[in-house]
Image (cartoon, one colour):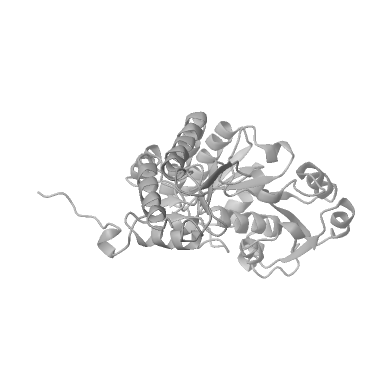
Length: 368
């Protein structure tokens, strides 16, 4: 009997790509680890009670990540929605059912002006109002009142201003308000720096540096808060019911967490540096080429290769190169703008050779 056919990207007219931009959702986040794929396959073969699964997996994630509890959500944005709902409605069935009608509930979430971002919508959809404060203690203290339900921090910018995370936590806790951090593309290091600073919950994407299911998120923090977040999500009939993390995503993310503490992160870093060296070696002999390795920020933690040149000597600009890379074969997605930026974080073995050859080909053809 012939092997069962299954759909492929090419079969539906979609071209796969080499990802030189990082853990962007628009490119599929990351490639799942083999252990994750296996865990999801095994989970798909049996039924289980989801509430019992969340409890058991939550305890195990807490043990591995040195946290009180871990909650699996349907992505990091779902975590923003569910934790906000938990801070507003708690576990009260009537309040949970009424969201996003927050009449009679605490319905304001405080954030810093510098921490606003596109994912605010996942918080606002609960029915709250976002209240902005300047990045100083006096301004932050002034915005708390009896309607304050939560303080939201964007991890990429945490600690970059006048207030440290610990100082924000102290002010919020003085008013009896929990603090939540969106750290989607960051590393969930152990011990967790945000939990060490006293935040009540911190959320990560499961499909970025953890290399778990793309449709998964990881929340670490206080058990009672995270259990309330679960009550405000699937399988319960609540505002986050559409954000369903199935048994496969739950077990797949657990596998990714288990692997996180056994992966050789130093070796991974050396592999990324090797990819960038291959690409640098291929282009650095061309006229006016300048290369630089930039160190990362909090998110997409990998070295980045910056490539610049004089268009008077190589007659093509970086955006044109990006377009040709995307349109060519293999399809390569790379950052443009002021020069080229090569992020090796999500590249697979052997792709560096393909990127190097294609980039050299494009630039060499345009040498004056």
